[in-house]
Structures are given as C-alpha cells and as structure tokens.
Length: 139
Image 1 (cartoon, rainbow, N blue to C red):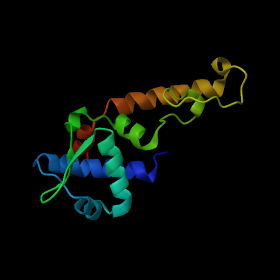
Image 2 (image 1 turned 60 degrees about the horizontal axis):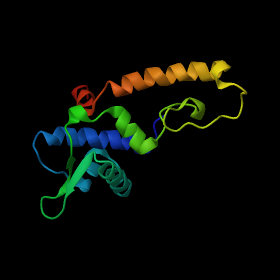
Image 3 (image 1 turned 60 degrees about the vertical axis):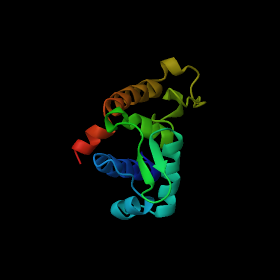
C-alpha cells in the first residue's frame, strides 16, 4: 500500500508536470492549496524529490519548484522508491530492500515467497512501464 506521503508526492508531481508546459516554477503554497496537501508535509516531500534529482528549485521572486527532467523520463517506480522504499509486499522478495522473513528454511521452496515474487514482478513491470507523463495523460 502506498503511504500518504507517496500519494501526496504523486499528486504534487502531477501538478508540476501540468505546470511544466508553461515553464514556470511553482511555489509550495500553490501546490499545497491546489492539491490540499499540508504545507509542512509537502515541504519535506519536495525536498526529498529535489535531493533525489527529480525536482529543481529557484529562490527569490518567481522562485519555487520545477521538474528537473522531462515527465516522460520520470518513472512511477522511481518516485515510489524515493518516498516509500521497497515496492515488494514482503521483505524476502524485495530486490532492493531484501531481508529474510525468518519463517522458512528455504525461500526458493516457499510457496508464499514464490507467489509474492510474482506479484512483485508484475507490479514492477507496470510501475516501470509508466511515467509521470503517462499518469498526467490519464488524470
């Protein structure tokens, strides 16, 4: 399940993708008001996205946040990993955040691991195959 933080990040990025066509930077207040996201929480989210290289920012008059890369190049999987970390539902099937569940003696023979590995693979395929631009087209 996506965290509220990740949901807010996706909504904020969709808003920025829409504004990106106008080549303007957007203030935190504008995004927060338009998307009904608590401003303080949004500040943290946008800073995380900036530190990850997804967003850029300008200071001063006319300042704010903007997409640092094209919306076509920003994959949904990337945003989820930046904000929430693991995509897999179980740590024992995670590719980037693997941890043993400690429940089974052989993960390769575990039917739970096998099933949730398939869920992970399909989820990765869908999220990797969709960009911010794709999401914006359908909103």
